[in-house]
Length: 213
Length: 112
Image (cartoon, one colour):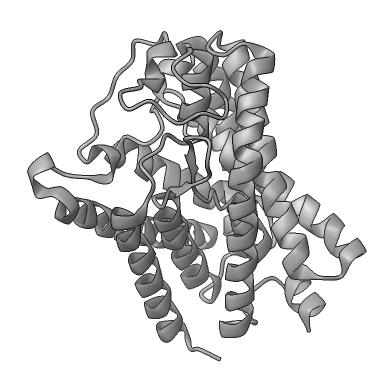
């Protein structure tokens, strides 16, 4: 759901940039207090993995493909929605400027959808589900599904405000495709969390580690 | 349990493997947003196949344009999948270095 430049008029794109910068500032504050020598390798490897996974478009039928976004994954593993904002912002800057994936003027909107909304929805729905389900893998899979679907609906609303999509058909198309793409997001997120817990349980945030022990 | 060095190397290798597989196996169909744009602009039905020559960005009205050095994760057409591999490997390593650099920079700023 990388929005290209042509889809949002400049004044609106500027508004999304301002909102994105506020969250980015908070993410830098999070990084300053939370990142230590041990967590820096995890965040860097996670970002590289998210970049690679985002380039892997899988067919989801109906003439459409989709790839992992990774907001829920970053937020759950590093224990904060701001981790998703931090990682996704850097990934989106690299994708936009070097690979032309996602626009430049609209990068604020992309950061807001995939980093901020994806990260917050992923993190808080994971925390809520974990309390009820007591299983970190099912909880992270459902949280990641929501963290794919809800940003796509936000994107559809932004497209409506921009005058690019009509509201209801936009919501239906975006919602339908991302409900399916989200299944991939959910499965891959749960698998990666499982592998990380096997390899380095110390690095993965305690809330996940404790629940799986 | 893996030490930091093994963990980073294993993580990079897995990321590169995924990226390189993507060059050969990734679907060429439009993504969710592009597909929605094709539906809205009448070039595709909601559940139908993607058109061969569809242009999802035709629906956009913006005038800003930017040409990236490696558009669509590829180099020259002539380089084919080799160009794709170079682009993905470069992107994965750039991401690793940028995030590591940014993390250390943020950490250093704490102590000053």
